[in-house]
Image 1 (tube, rainbow, N blue to C red):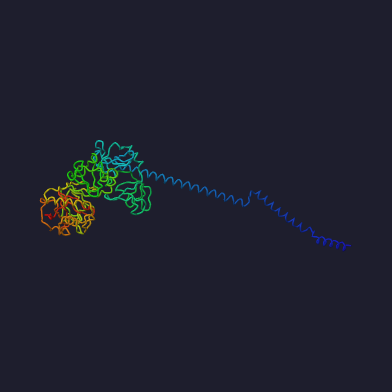
Image 2: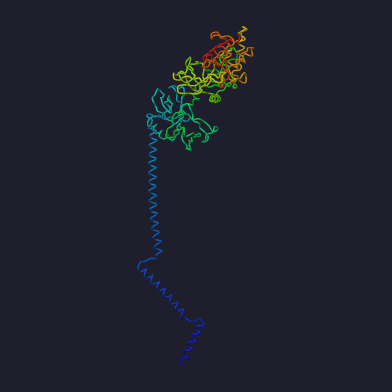
Length: 551
């Protein structure tokens, strides 16, 4: 029986196994899972009971704490840097305020100009009709040196002169107001007789020059770019300015403007040769001509009578036509004058020595007269090189005059009227012929000088001019002046008559220039490329020889 039971039990197990219903593996799995869950619960309970936390949470909190500390450190650094920046800014501001104060404190007796627009004139003398030598813009300053009546004697911007007290603020009120005017300025440092180009763009091109700045002028700096300083009107080279905090000061009158300012009511001759100046306001032919106004010469208008202006120019007071084809007035005259004014040596002694070299060791080879204005070629220390004439020799002498004895004034100037009276063709046949020759020569005044030329219209040099004039009257002359000087017969200055030829020599004593005497102490000659055929005084330089080639 036992064997059977065992057998049946075995069969039952086999059947269950075959059907996949043996529960033991599942029981084992459940038992293992339960055991693992129990262990996990125990661990959690133990950690919770002991105050423990998951490791991940601890790491996150540690990172957060570190970040908070870093943020606090960064904020502390930022605050420190900001404090340092504010400190530096305050120091810089205090230093700038002190620098501005130092600018004001540099003036012992400061005057501040208070005008509405325009500018205040600085005059050479304490008088409303004194020569204008400078100008002061609103809020510019000066050093007050003294007072004469209603005029302050001032120094400003290199200008020493007088300004009306009416427009000047002084004392502590002026100093406080001036402090607000201190700005970064470019102060022009070129020499007194030079100027600095103002350019449209920061580049050296001939086409972009739009103006000039004179020595000592001050301009507010808008920017500084690679060797250039930008100012309101354009750009100037940084090489010729001193950029610093400064106040505005007086500006010297532009040298050409100074030449024009000498005329109260300017008139400029527009003719190409000479405009007749008459003794009375009427055209009476040759009868009432007392002078001639050269082309682009200047005059002061004293009044008007009908179609005539009464003028004063140089030594002449008389009348010229109001015809606008002949004369310019107003802004037209100013514009012409600005384009015409040239640097001239104006002699103020009867005779002034001319030397070949700028040295008293160089011999005197001629003398010049105060009756003339001589174009300046160059200026040296104590000497001026002037243009006398070109002559008919290609290698003309250099001519130097000394400025050390105050016998000459060098300034921009305009030509003015010259004394002149036409020759009358009187009944005397010989005198009439001389008058005809002179009047014929005068027809070509204003025409060009051309070295080697003989054309009365297209250009001639000095000897070519007199040769061509005389040829028209059947008088033959050699081609060059040194040979012409041996023609005819010699006469003295007291014997010379209109039509006689006056010769001038260079420093070696060689004749190099010739002119025709026209009477009234004057000559007509082809002077130089700059002057062309013109009228001058007969002794504008020392005459060397006088010849009569007519009789």
